[in-house]
Length: 218
Image (tube, one colour):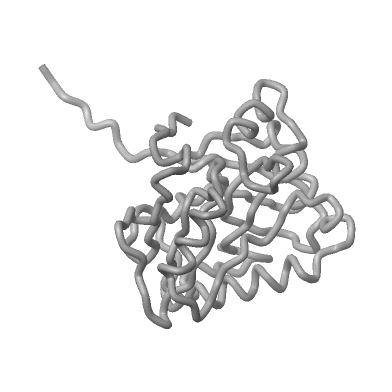
């Protein structure tokens, strides 16, 4: 019997394999760490080239047709090319991301309920930012969204995923749990973007959140 090497995985053009946090039991502490809310949704890599936008899942599947609100918002940005990393979510009346609502709303026909919590900027107008430290990429993303056209803001299809600086990570995590959120992600401020699993991003899960026991199959 002859075994065949399947060869390298071929990803679609424009797709960047996302940076994946390591699961942690304790919240990292220190001035070099920043803390973001972990929203309960689908991880998306969003790529725009001129007048074409594509929304990829973490495995490179094309979800563009299912999230028109995100696509419209990215098209409204004053850029020619851009790659954004974020979480696609849908929220209930309490403004907390609801995975079941998201899953139902982006079924076969898609839905305008889904929007993107953007948390990283990998490329813009031909400038690759992946080698830049997190805080540089973060500042560029925040500036881009703050200065976006009014129609991009009103659409609500892209929102900045807020972070906390200079705080006790354990306190941030306890507060996230009280709000019934999925958890937090601690990120090294001085590190570049690395595809695949990294210890420079650490995810601490809320044990009482639905996502703690759910297996992702997409």
